[in-house]
Image (cartoon, rainbow, N blue to C red; front, top):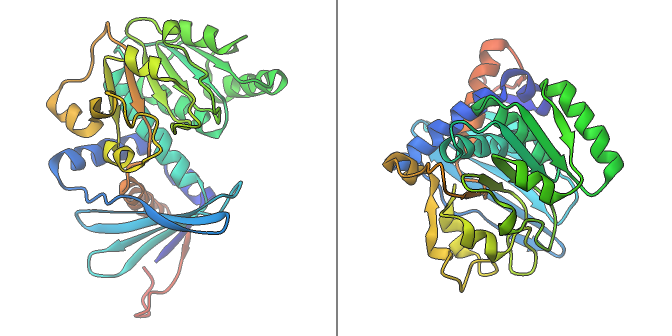
Length: 313
């Protein structure tokens, strides 16, 4: 059994590897080969424990994480179907990589093939991963970013330009980002809309990662009304959440499953606005850990512990 820390996963899995793994996950979901139960959990006062289980042919697993805290050590575990524990990943990188890669697949499926300008409203860790994924699926020529802290924005943009080898430009406002973008990512903690429908040009694609509840949402109903296509990696999860922004609106039933819509070939429209609601597909962590464990075994990365039977795996 192999234990992988964040540094181990970073060594063996690139964003391109993760995007490829998430393509396989969506294909498995469309074919009915992905078991993806709803996430569940419980609260203990102000802190909660959540888990997202899933299974693919050959593998079963789950991710465990806390809610109600600023940061936590997440655990993802992977079993073979014979009952042997194959790998454990400890840390947050696997989850961040998974979210970024799913966003990249959504961009590839929904954005125009000629999209070259990426806009980011919010520029924390998740937006950074979306930028990495966008660079995998499109030959970006320009990146515009906005966050409220102007000094931090300038520093982040300069660092990103060095890391990604792209022109990364601080923008004066969220509106300036939205109006210029071919692909737009909203990744904020805003409890009021930071994006207006009037700012969106025909053919733009939007990845939404921030809050989407009735009382805290980074985009309003006008954006959903403007979008000709609304998709999610796991739309059924939103329908189970009574506080989801779209309950009681005609938009709830418009949310398409990204996997099945892709398999049916009814996604890209170069003149239409499209919107992807990122939720976190249960089971995708299992596939990503399986890929990481295989690559780590080939590279001799991670800590190998003996199995209960005594033989190291």
